[in-house]
Image (cartoon, rainbow, N blue to C red; front, side, top):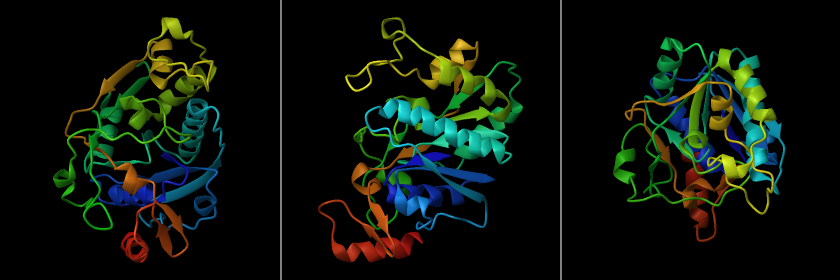
Length: 264
């Protein structure tokens, strides 16, 4: 599951990463937040290896944290209705390491915890811009590791700067409890350090971790071999047009066609 608002090259790269995973998804849910190209099925993200759902999401620009929570809840509901047993969220700007989905699934299905559990990946490894027109997801990503993080501007597709907001997994059986808690929870900022108030959102939006803790659940990190890669914003924010990818300012027109053919 992921949430997209114009990060088309990032989404195409993430789908490539899903296709090379040791365990591929059964269902891929993408929430299109005010994204006409994606919602109208213009992007080549469908696969014969899994079922793809593209659903419209709400564009709440003045309350990005609230929009993120609503979009993630929406994606989880679609995946659950489609029969998913383990719900896995990956931020659209990230690439799953080859064993990420398998590690999540094994931990979730083998867990003996009776209370709701939220698993998250270790801190994402920052990537530089790829040398070619696509990230080498089948091998070679480690050669692109950057010395430090490069954060994109927060928006309706991004959550707080926390590991769980980049990627997490929950059991389908735990989701009803967590969904109810996350949607209803109201937390005073001075009592909950995980909530950061902002001028745009005077009423703090609780994190999914807050929801887990409020129902007596647990929060675990999966082993570090389940890698999550953070794409470089200069590459990830490229937008797709039919037959081409529109590059951010500074790109070259000739590269658009190369990107489209490499990703389709």
